Image 1 (spheres, rainbow, N blue to C red):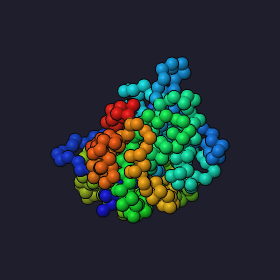
Image 2: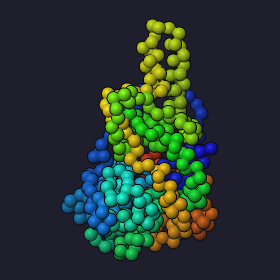
Image 3: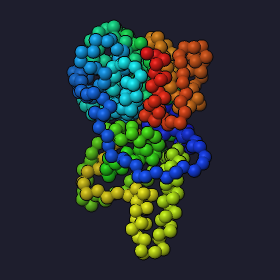
Image 4: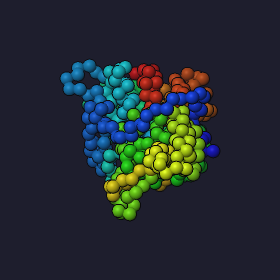
Length: 390
């Protein structure tokens, strides 16, 4: 079952059983995109001539005239995601602590541009992040907290060593839902999983809806701000302008629909019943079409633009093992004085980390009612955990 692939691979959709009982139906959900400006103060393109790149970063907490020295929280997203996947987390973290935040679009992702977007080796990615941090940090005494999700967690671990070499003070290291052992075990099914994802979407709204219904992001607000940045527009011919939302249960990810919220399941059951009731009469054709639209989410677009994923993770297979091999030992030996591992399930812990946790080498917190994108699904629960390393 692909269900078991949720162990630290980007982007994964691990399953969590939903409670029983009846859930009242809700009205239509809003899948229109949200602006990053509602979550960050500004965005910049940091030019790094050393690697012929221009990195998109989203900033918050860098207010002019602020005399208080605040830690710098560097946020690193997972493979296939973007810096905007941290949007709802950033909104929540500022309600708890005074901190400067920078969310980076990693090479090949989001709006970052490099001379070689296909080089996703862990060495290159960690070096990139180290160079961006050097551009942002003007005071060697600045306390830096590295926080990474999935692939970004692996980058954060490697980068914690690189930053020490350039005299940056890494005060904390937070890794979200990636563990070496379980990640390596899941690699054999990763290609099958990725091939099951839709190849393109007829609109951004369709993509956002798929993101939520498939379980990639269980938080609708986060999906509305982050999903568009994971896509790139593609021109199509007029004959291709009529589309339907890609099947939310494509071959290869048959466990995804088990993770949907009960209100989604109730909606689908109710809709299915309505379609059957209206199929026998012509007078109720309009109702049937409306209900079928909610069930299949069919959409027609008059634009000749569709959207595909910004990064094709299937082509990065040569780098997968490098992302995760040795990760547990490197995390345990990181020079950061404070380490925190956030997991979506205790089953993800491998043997080295189990021993290290028993020896008190790092703090661990298991969060429930969330998928692999922990910081997107339950940002309000992740933020209090972050205090452990601040």
